[in-house]
Length: 168
Image 1 (cartoon, rainbow, N blue to C red):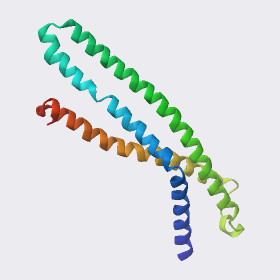
Image 2 (image 1 turned 135 degrees about the horizontal axis):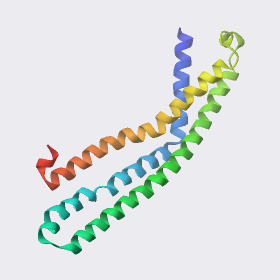
Image 3 (image 1 turned 120 degrees about the horizontal axis):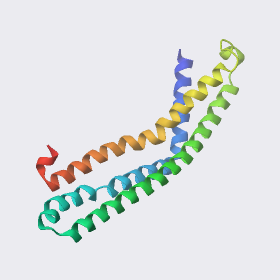
Image 4 (image 1 turned 90 degrees about the vertical axis):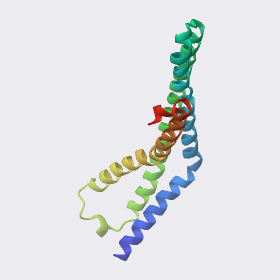
């Protein structure tokens, strides 16, 4: 039992070490996500100006200017999203390769009695499937959890600033 606990702790430590080696890339993913949220911040403010100020006063230039600004913000957000997806794919492939090398080296160091109960290739299929699940979860999952929290906070502040009744 103690050996099993030590193996689990060593595996967890090794996995965190692989994450720690890529901390700059994970922070960059978080920063890109945050910029994506901040880019979308002016949209409700511009819509408020269109509805409350420009349409009642009949200011066609103001409506067109705000619509153009909304279009620019949307296109900027989509461009950033494209870059984010490409960068995240590259980080995921690098992370997956590092974790697979680590786990396969561990499997190769096992004694025959440790894996003799598994069928041919069954252990590698299980490990590969688990690694794919972890790779999807960790770099992207960390940034998405923080991003959702930041979105709620930022958009709540904007709604309070525009009109407190909107935030209720």
